[in-house]
Image (cartoon, rainbow, N blue to C red; front, side, top):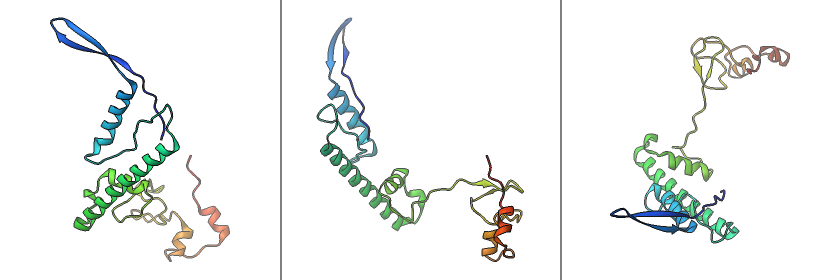
Length: 170
């Protein structure tokens, strides 16, 4: 959480007939409106951790209360996702916000997945998962030690493995 200073300003109201009225809007009014908009962005009872401190800097008590409310909101999101998962077992029905909440709470859930970036096979350029021993497209052995561990090739000595590993990409 990082404090963001907000300054007051003056606004102009058009009264019609080329008449206007200038009036001040305090920094607190602006900040409270912003916090209300952001926190209510995800529906009734949502809270995204944005609040207006009583003073110029948030106190430890204010920060702890904001964290408590944010954790409570995250737990409700995870609970909703758990119910949806039990009903459908379809990850398409789990929202990004619910996934973010589970990650924030450091939970392991069957509906929570973190896609791993694919790499290219150096032999055939096929998209593959990182860390595979053998390319499924062309059969190139990408990690001989790992392949030997699973019986895919004959086992190798430690002196051989140093020369078999591909050079790191830059």
